[in-house]
Length: 248
Image (cartoon, rainbow, N blue to C red):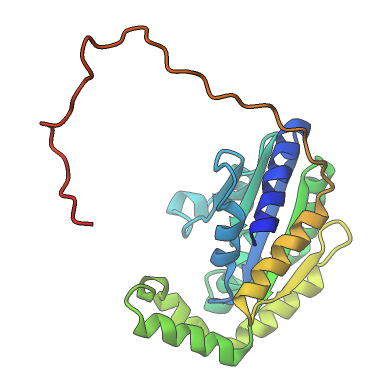
């Protein structure tokens, strides 16, 4: 992981230097580990360059907009990488399975989405799509961990519980999505996520291979000496200020 994260830093310099615009979409079953992969990608790079987008449910106003409109607002400018923790593919998954969209809206999405993604890539944006797949037994194990661990319980939403009972409906929705939107210009990359650690390593390694980059020559950094300009007559002290208790 340390080696791969170092390479992500090299990629970061290259993205800025070349003014690249990159979008990485993470989709998958609940508890498949999307957040864990994204966390490892962003852990050692600048949040001003690697930006994570995890949109909540659409507002009443957003529901009246063009479906893709709120996602377009988060597309990268030059020198940025945007990681979508779930994306416009909500319509192909949770919205379809849970009945949050009509059958016609779902069909329209599957028809329009490839053209939307062709438009994105035609604009010069690099688009990489990942589907993290986890089997039934492993998902059940991860859900039970969330139930029994207070530190993880916040991850378990009512929607997660509902999705657990609709395993096969989600499977069929996934298959329809892949069939309609796995294109030459925006192919899907499936990640075996039954082992979280291996999934993270494999996914980051694959991502680095999708974006040809060169290692930039590092600037020589020299730490400046402290200037005495504006120095105190005696060393300033904040000993009598309100310090927090040193419990540890």
